[in-house]
Length: 198
Ligand SMILES: [Zn+2]
Image (cartoon, rainbow, N blue to C red; front, side):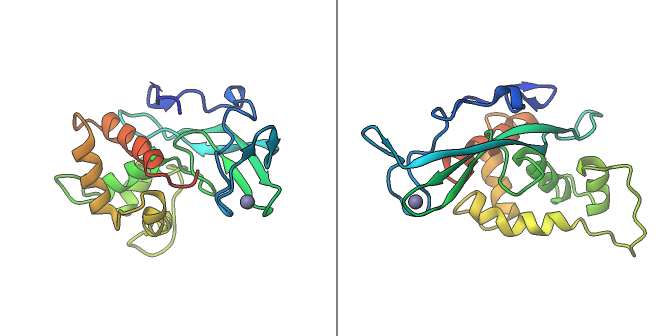
């Protein structure tokens, strides 16, 4: 996997123009039947098309708006068991509009100090939500419902991690410095390292 590079907190190489060749990102084995993707010249995990999808890539820090861009997505189909596997750029999650960085940044915003910023979910949405200008009419306190969905998936994205506090403590302790950029890079790197399905 290529290292994460940043330009104004936007990872490069995610756009459709950066789509890798079908052989370059083929998983080594089928995640369902665990059989090898290839045996000799025979390919069992075959290319099954590609498409472009949207992803929120940019943490809204330093007065930047959250940014929604297009990214590439490749699919493979296992001819042995029929499973369809989606491969995405590093840091992009399957069936999730927000990137790893955007989600971890949202966790940091709503977590208590000193690790987090201690904001309400409404304040956090105004900063990192996809549509910060949206005004809601539902009764206060406003709940950012995606946060609940993301909290439930922490264990599948970072196996071994049971909750937001445990995740953030782990990420901050692994980062060489405590800047947001370093912590988010660790979040993306550890997500891959820990082998969550992409
Ligand atoms: Zn299979």
